[in-house]
Image (tube, rainbow, N blue to C red; front, side):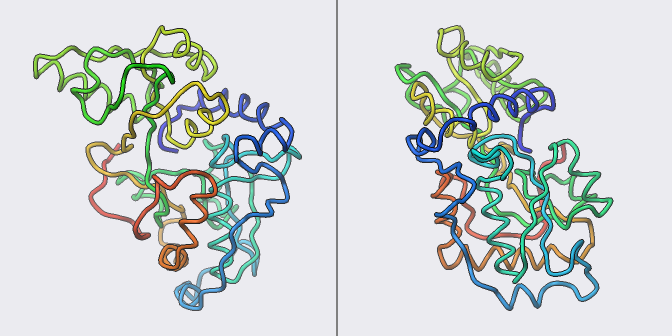
Length: 313
């Protein structure tokens, strides 16, 4: 995950689970399909090049099946559908596309996000596709095949006079809502230091117990800006229609930070998953999957196995 600490993640799951119990018609109003049937899911064909890239000694958890862990933390990335049991979202759709490319059935295993490292290393599933950001530290224990940029959204009230926040000076003197211990907090603290060194006002960081309290603080004017993982805020903005984007921020600022399919270190599957992701990227299917969940801004030009020179935190 690119930015929610464990306590906040739990509260977010509870809030989003409640929201997805709304009727299918309400979801349609938001242009997010949260039905269990997923009639508009994008499918891809078997890619023999990807199949051939699977190392000969790799053993799938279940023969003929791609078993993938996903944390249903909230739409549009992954959430429970309106039947309260089927997991749907952008990450499940990526999992289906990769399984299709490998000529395998897909089995999604819902997990708590904090539990995926132990489950993966112990062999409970073949891969994790759940908004896992790639860092040098994580690369010491896992292999990665990138499939999306890790972005944080920068949002304000719809009637805010703030037009754009692209760099530290744009944020000088503003009151930011941010999660404690997150990547976005790290970045905003650096921005504040840069501003002070340049003779500008520091940023004021505010912390709240849950997302409902954060949104209320923004709506009431107690804060100016909300920074959270980009995908979450896209859904909240569509649902509430009272906040808007004024920018995005890389989770690895000042460098790019990507989200990746995660596999056991040295298991022999990562290169095949990278090939399986690159074919849909090249033929445009990948773009359609992200467009379906309104995540086009997070698209990558290509998938990479264990990209180099990433932050180590």
